[in-house]
Image (cartoon, rainbow, N blue to C red; front, side, top):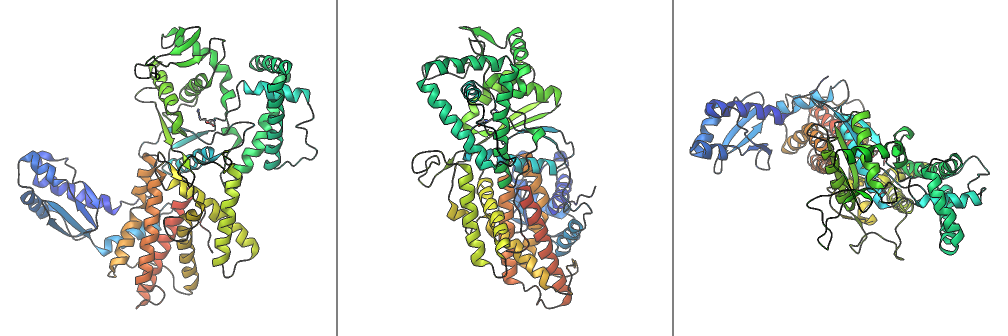
Length: 587
Ligand code: ARG
């Protein structure tokens, strides 16, 4: 395992020992190091310390400066303002650090593994059987996929769970209809496309609904069918399975379009917990966590009340004996904690379900299934808005089909690629168009903090300027083209050289990749990585504008600049991969 000590940590260590030498009674004080515009780093921790020690902050800062070891990593340290420290690092330290990152035999740029990895179950990408996927499902899939990748990259043991909606009373109507029209889901040919599967399901749903609303006898038969389903009647289950299988064809086609790997064994839908529901209720009732109220099994909370001031309970079992969404989620918690042995449960689910999860988690804590060592967290995401700032709908007010949206993104992106492309074949344009279009959609989602709403604006998403994935992909492709043009010259770090401002800024930022990944993973915050990558591309652009690479003054400088290009590209590639976005070699 080769991790590289980042410059931030190296500077931090030196400042922390200087601090404890100057103030021995505060040996573990934090210098509070930040990246800064004025210097490479700024330390702000002395003000608070001086206050505590009743000392003059500038005097204390001056004392600290005297104790700082300079030379290898730190080039200079100065007192600034009311008692800050401005720190510059040496050019050599920057290049040596980057060289060590480039040489990482595991190819992970010296990013360390977490010290104590655990087991996290990530619940994401959970569409519903026999229903069209919409933008809400897009967000869960895109954010979840990136969080999974980030966690796995830090060495966490990740178990994926796609809690699809495959159970409930609505299936009674569908199954009954299929039973009465048995050839509806029989396929003539072996190959059914996702589109066809969804249109079959849509047609069936409409027909079943129509009958259900107009024909009382069908309604009665459909209701009886729900009972058969819950009892696990084999014929009914076989029909239900047909809906699940048909839906999976559709789901996989969408995930495929999204360039996302979803594995069959990770799809454990609501029905997967059927066998646990009765026991979950029994455990909750016996422990007194849940109580019977008007026939239903309920859990009450002091702070959850309806508009009339009356408490609104979490209903674990309805008065007719039926189990709902809460019973399933509580059973899933038991499965994830006791069978899968997870210590963290993460739910990537719409913020509109936050009250549900708050009550479910609190119930599980009262039952002792969750505690200080085994925790659950909802990574709640906001709503996707249309250009009018309202939840994204078609002009007719219908929810937008995810597939249509993705197709349009790919089409727009292909136009952008075609316009810029000089030597790409039609086939390449189609392939790049998909990578750019899907990347644009993912990046727009991941570059704002998950809990915020965002506007779905395709024009902005595929724009070449600004904070878009296309901008990052072009930066990457441009670097690859320079590396191809380099001919005999090879990238090589030259720590003896003096660096320019632009080279220093780029180098320092590349070095900060490791800590950015750690932070983004620890906080489930892909937007922090996206922001980092955007800045990386921006710093690269200004480096490229100011520093000729292939026409640099000396062969050593050419090599060193090629090295900076190369490690920037590798960092972009790795970072984008963690967001689930491709970086084509040519664009
Ligand atoms: N299928 C649900 C929906 O479409 C999301 C499921 C979220 N996960 C869970 N464990 N409840 O809204």
